[in-house]
Image 1 (tube, rainbow, N blue to C red):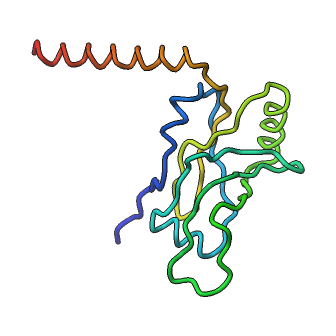
Image 2: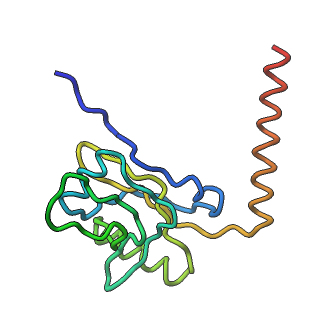
Length: 154
């Protein structure tokens, strides 16, 4: 019998690495409804414009788009509804304190299935200024050019 893959990636947030400097990462579960899980297994999700927000001592993922499952007949949830993040209470308290005190952003980096459970990799981030973004793009292009020149020599 074949084992299921350890991690099946559904969606990634590529803009997060460009627009933010990541300070700390962790994994959280998602509270989903039935049709949403099936839609995620089909890969129908988008992290564009998605962010985390603390409310009432809990963390919620706001603006995560999960397309409605095409074969469902009843109880179709809003595709962009707020979804609760599931994590240990100690982690939750620490993150909520950092969000309020340090004025950081809570950004999802990746949405995936691990051992059959829907998970999201979240990060506490600080927004980059425009000159920081240009600097990181310049550094990336320089390393790319160095790699190209090394390959030409070999």
